[in-house]
Length: 323
Image 1 (cartoon, rainbow, N blue to C red):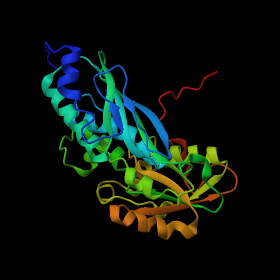
Image 2 (image 1 turned 90 degrees about the vertical axis):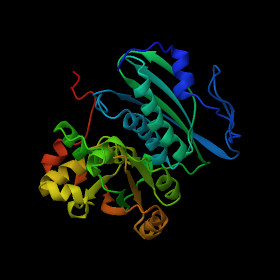
Image 3 (image 1 turned 60 degrees about the vertical axis):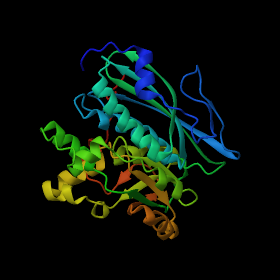
C-alpha cells in the first residue's frame, strides 16, 4: 500500500460512510456519531456475532482488495445464516498498515456490494494503523424462539450439507501454487464465499441443528455432536463433490478437501428424515442443493470415516497441547 495524506476521519468519510438512514427506518442514528441507535423489529430476537480476519492467516495479503472486503463481511454473516437470522446491521474495525486510496476504494466496493445484497447496513466502526486486520460485528433478527442452534440434533436425524464443501480449500491450494485468475471457480469459492443467509432463514422450523462450515466439515460437525451429546455416522459415497474437484484430484484427496478443508461457509444441518423433502423444496428457489451425508447416532464421535481423515480434522488457531 502506498502512503497518503488521508486522515482517519477523511478515510471513514470517503470510503466507509454513507447516509445510513436512507430508506431504513430501523437505523435511527448511523455512521458519524459515537454510537449507532437501532430499532429492532417488534417480536424479533437479536442475533449478534463478531469475526476477525487477519492478513496471511484468514486471507492472502495480496488478494484482490474487493475480495478481501467481501470475504471479511461474508464470514461474519455466515454465523447469522447458521442461526437462521436475517442480516440487519454491522460494524467494522479496520486496521491498515497505510491508507492507500486505490486499495480502499476496491475494498469498500467489495464490502458494500455484499452488505447491500444481504440487507446489512454498516452503522459504525473504527479505523487504526497496524497489520491488516478486519473485525466485523454483525447483528441479525429472527422470530422469537426459532433460532437454529448446535444443540438440537437427535438420534436418527439426517445430517445434510448445502452446496459443495471442499471448493474453498482447493482454491486456497491453487492460490498458494500461483493461480491468480479470480474467475476460476475454486479460487472464487475461497476468495468470495457466499453466506447462506436465505438458506438459514428457509430452514427455520425444519432443521433441528445447524452450523456453518468454517473450520472443516468434520471439525464443525463435532461441535454439533458435542453440543447435542450424540454421535454421527457418515457415508463418504454421499458427499457432494464439485466437478472442478473431481476433475483435478484423486478421490481420497477430494474427500480430504471436503471433510477437512474449511472456509466453505456452507451450512451443515440435521433434521428428521421425514423433513428432508420439505427442506429441499424450500431451498429449490435458491438453486442450492441440500445433500444428506449421514445420520445422527447414539454415543459420541464420528463413524464411517477413515482414521487418516479424522486425525487431520479441521483448522485450529492454537493446536498446541497445553500441559
